[in-house]
Image (cartoon, rainbow, N blue to C red; front, side, top):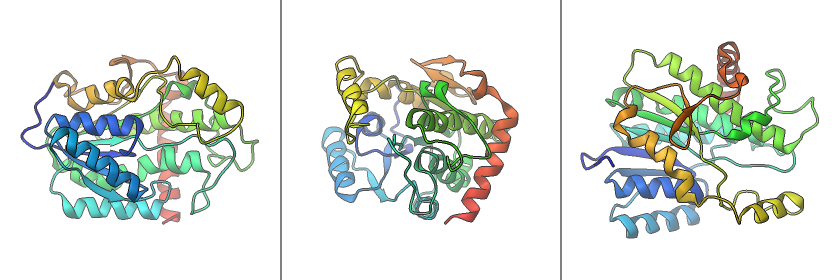
Length: 284
């Protein structure tokens, strides 16, 4: 366990429940100043109080909808204004959507929240991260990237039939490609970036929806990991000394694993980056 008593600053998105809350709590227990980014004020405040009462450190709460480019840019700017350093960024906020839904800016929601949210927030916080010695970016990806159906010309599922598992899996592949290209861009800096598969975790994920998916998640719940277990690899990536110079990798169970070949395609990673820049510029 690393002692963070030199007051490291750690930002965790979606920190009000599940893996995000478990991650924020563990990093706070390590002595870090936590910045929570949450969409819902009530849930965010309740989680902040829970973290404060269990660790003695009160997190700083920023409110924002990370599926909105404009909102995400605003939050990043607010954090940059409020803080002089950022040691760890944990991109965790995400969702699974059983039917095709759109963000407030008209982008398909898996793409908007699960990928573009990571991209826009990280880009907005990059000056702060690069100014902080030995800073780390940790993004939650998933083994579901195996189910990806990547079409870089149809990232918002406008031309293809929307199939929830494929759309979700594709967004998780984008997390891996994003990590890969960002690591390439950060070469020669003191900032690393890695992503991980948390395991299949028992959270509220998917339970808001009726039908077979909900039944599946509830049955699977008997065999699932706790949020604390799901957060373990992310906490390891955020704090472990032995990973000081490891970057651009995909982890599971605290070990480097190879993503599917689609997750190792540098050309696709670069093209995704350019497309993401365009989406980010056109929205918000």
